[in-house]
Length: 133
Image (cartoon, rainbow, N blue to C red):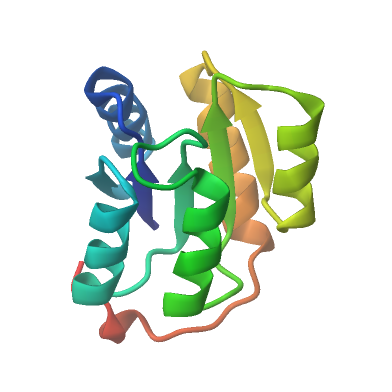
């Protein structure tokens, strides 16, 4: 069971992604914006993976990932989930080392498969006792 942080500004989409990941056996915390995501990591510790929207109200998901990597372990896998599948966005995600860039709508099975692959390819590290979740 992995700890996942979902950052999505649309409440219905955020709830659906979180529900799909919970159903897949993961622990999920969700934030509506970058500020909430950074606060979560600061107060509860880093998750095992991030699921990030690209278009957020305060900063974009790429900038958020950079900030999260500064605030926590830099090798935590990130999966971008966005309605915008332009090649430049997909390439930017790849350049940032994202495990995947998925274009909405994303089926639950596909999302879980991508998250699980990202988690299994992550180098082991970190102490779970450091996490409050």
